[in-house]
Amino acid sequence: MRWIDTVHIQGDGLRSSAGGTILIDPQDIIWEGSGDDVFTDGADYALVATNSISLVDVVISSRQVAGSGRNAHLTEMSTGDSGNITLQAPDIELTNSRILSFATGTYNAGNVTLSANYSVILTNTQIDASAVTGTAGNTAGDVVIEAINKSSTVLDDFLPVAVKDSRIKIDSQSVIRGNDIVIEALTTAGVRNEFLEDAFDFVEHSVHDYISDLDGDLTDVLDEFLGLDVTFGVMQGFDDVADQFAGSSGADFLLGDAIPFDVYDVDSSVQIDGILQADGDINISSSAVVESTVRTLAISGFYASVSVTSADSTISIGGKAVLEAGRDITIESIVESGVEHEKFHDLFGDEDPFAVWPLDLSVGVGVMTGNNRIDIGEDVRLTAENGRIDILANTERSASISVSGGRSSSAAALWHW
Image 1 (cartoon, rainbow, N blue to C red):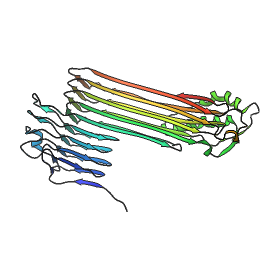
Image 2 (image 1 turned 45 degrees about the vertical axis):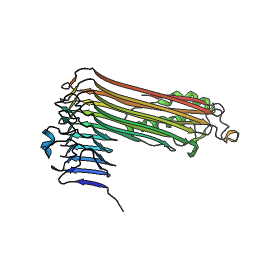
Image 3 (image 1 turned 120 degrees about the vertical axis):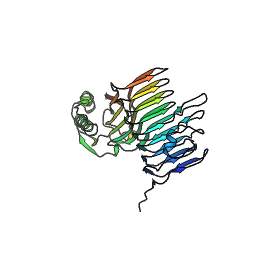
Image 4 (image 1 turned 120 degrees about the horizontal axis):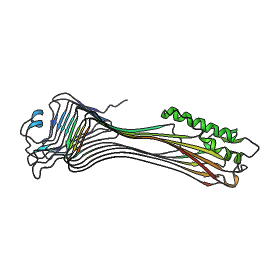
């Protein structure tokens, strides 16, 4: 049996009275068609969906006006304060639509919030929370558009690849007005992998072969999952250590027949081609943050594990976009990557069947790639009337390896970005 929890809205609109609240909360909201609008007459309004919200040719207004219908809510003077409007779903898409909470005269506008996990796409859409013909005591509402994708996972096996992203796109025909305007895309991924390496089958081969296999596997993984055509030769620096480990006899040992890889790819993007007009501040941010921690419980011997993180954050303000703020404009792109390896040796103590090996050696390889970029087109206009304009791109990376236990534990690490 399959259940589909979707609301299709058509008809002569929805109405509430001032002070009330309208809430619609299914899995998917699909709302299409001229005339299928909602007028709350000052009440707060919320659309909440488990999966997605899609509006096409819809007007949602929390204004209080004397008349009725679209034209009245677009043009008439306010007769009371406007309510707040909230849309919340993992994916939100608005096409040819209007979200109206502005107010005129002595009345106050309402706030507008579009809160998604993955994407917000605006096409030929107007969001207006302004204070039109404002007077003393008449305030505009804030507009917040966010795509916040956060994940934190504890695993007991290695992932081949995990991809997380968030994006916001505002096209050239869209207009946003309000007091403070906040546009934020954020993707964060934290994974802690607790792995018992003796779960692998063991085969007899030399440490040098093991190192060579690791080098080749790393190159293949980066090509397959991230499209990076590079040959690292990353393990060549460990040859001397392998000689110390294996001894001059070049003897073969029982080593894990698989090399664990953990690949995490996070992306965050904001694209603005339209018009943003704020009485206060405009804040635009994109952040991609990934942290990979590998905690390995290993029998004595030679072991390697690999963490690959890719973090991309981009902000594009193009076309003939206009950003006008009464105070400050801040545009910031952030990339943060971290890799940590924790190795624990000698699980068997004095009964270790592999205690004949002269050295416990752990290798943690962290590969961190990423892109941090802000593009502002030559026809874009930025105006901070009574403030400043800050354009910032910040990148932070960290890496560490620690080893404990065993008779003579050693650590070697190589980080590349």
